[in-house]
Image (cartoon, rainbow, N blue to C red; front, side, top):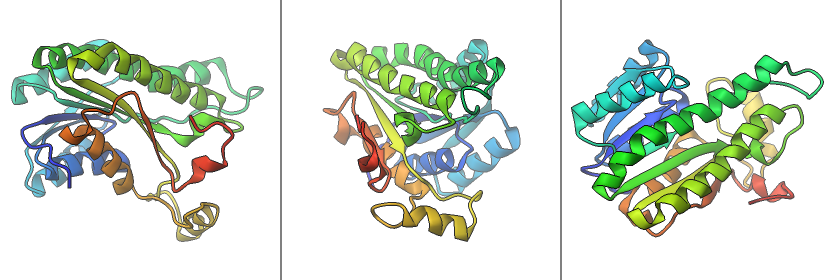
Length: 249
């Protein structure tokens, strides 16, 4: 396992299955972990799991689309742990429908929910990364960003994360701060039945569905000291599914 000892990690969207796996892996690697999301019960549950694994962890409830709440969350983490070395942006909200069906409200809400938190957390975390001359920003996306029928709003929001990550990487490249994009494919979860999981797996080159831990491993690499010469890159964790796309960028 990669070493992130003495580091402090902040994971947004930290209570979904992927966010929890990321927080747990970073904690087991030696990092102090801050989990933030909108549901206090779920935040407390994930924090307890990380603490039970022997890591130092804290949780904060915040609406990530409100800059004042994001700023307060970052300040709380700074007050408790002194810094933020690793920022994992893991908010993925899929909402919408076909162009003819999606409402204006659904369109704007999907873009706002997936993009505003990314910008706000980076805006409030990156300045102190600059002061410390070290930082790792890892944005978690979805393979659907390459294009999927009936998901124009979600695809648009996740395509924007791709461009944002590359631009941020260029802005920060001279300051020992990296920014990278982890793109998840089909991942097993509590919302899938055994039959559904088998059906999805049959359509993948590797013939098996991924796990939240697979995504966490990729994030762990980008969070570690070993990835210092890697920035602005996209890593597909999808069992080869991206090979079926006409635009694997």
